[in-house]
Image (cartoon, rainbow, N blue to C red; front, side, top):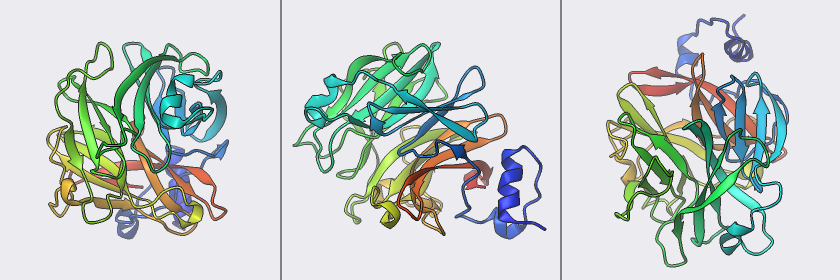
Length: 322
């Protein structure tokens, strides 16, 4: 008998599955099986050169997790176990919670962009750190990449590095206010390459600005801008949902399936609250041997943030979660 549970399990174990039409078009499929240390918030995941997995997430001094099989996850300590006092001008003295890290591997080292801020303010900054191993305590901070202040109409949090088909580096970021922005980076330093104005990618002018957590991926001839709409961080009452648009250019414009520009509030919904999955959002995407993998957090019925992992395929140039 075909069941959703058996299908997802078979996918994560590498077995071939024939999907009926209703499941192929289903938007709110359940997350794949995970175990071990399953708490995370604002996740980023990469596949390491040795075949294992490294994840980072919002936590005191940036939390880390590892896995050997993408299913069983283990706590790996904090990126900065001795603290990150250089972030206190943005977080407040003694505050340790650092937000929304973004992991990647380039130039034989790990890169991590991460945010320092506090709720409800645009006094924020995105920092860069690098590591030869990705392990706790091995990270060296390289300072501020982009910042915003109390007078800014944007918020310098939720970073994501994307390298385009020509090898150019860009950092997307943003949360509420005037929306999602982008700056060009110097690949030699990982820092901002010039002082040109910010590139505008997405906004929600008619919805209180409720868009954040950008993540840009490339598949074939398209770039995909993933974002989260609505409200996070309210446990099982969260209204977060995962949206996407696409473009032929890494700098946009990004349009949804209906052709609406994401600068005008456009976005095709990919996942929203369903069953015991509340407020799924702040997703990342990484490429594995079997498929692209969507990583996100959601809240369970008890209001605890949990790991969500699903595979992606592409239908007519649009991602489909399964």
